Length: 302
Image (cartoon, rainbow, N blue to C red; front, top):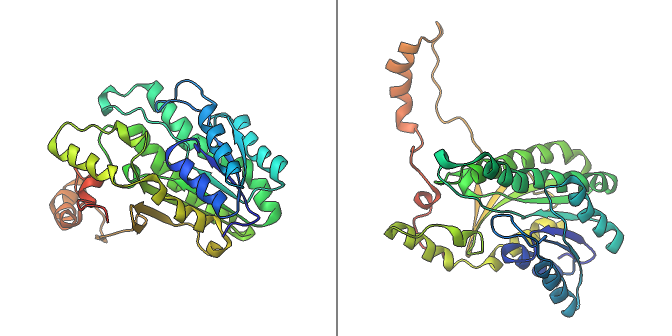
């Protein structure tokens, strides 16, 4: 499905990103494998993961180039796209998959942990997408595929930084899709369920947490890649501004926030009117205050 395409995949040295890069290559794409090889918390550097993924693609008869830049720096992000154009002549799709985790309960979260996660996920997504945009505009085609999370879409405990970044990516993707539709460029999000280096940090202390982790372990990273290949292909030319999720063999489409209830007082509202009339009427439609993704997906993956 991707013959002749050139695709940049960030965070492609391990886990979900690696499986995406491998499957894109098997479908005929030339792949820029970006990964600075940092730890799950964003520390250190290691060229090995990106080089290994690129070598595996080449050994199988495909085309790949390893890029070790950090997406947090605009010049690093630009180098990913520059490598695609210099090595393979063009850029057709960007997969914004790079990420780190610095989980901690809200009242203990440091400014440093907040900034680090926002910088990789949200700013990194912006930086790489911004670098690819001039090429997409000129050729009047292109596909942005951004990785969000149910931690942002639904909520999770101990992930204020990650949740904020991932929901911010949805807003960014929506704006890109609207602004770039006139030149034939599309932008979509995927919320993956998969056992990887990042999800392995999920605590497993209570029985419910242990059960959740065991479910995740059955969801391999390779299950995410087919949807990415489709969204990067010309077969998805009319699919844009959507939020998908992959949970093992199940693919889901998420709704966007829309009004669920409305109440009008022609004479206006007082705080007491809100307490006496509005909230009792709205309360049956309130979202659960303590809901996390495990509550929305309590069943075993298929």
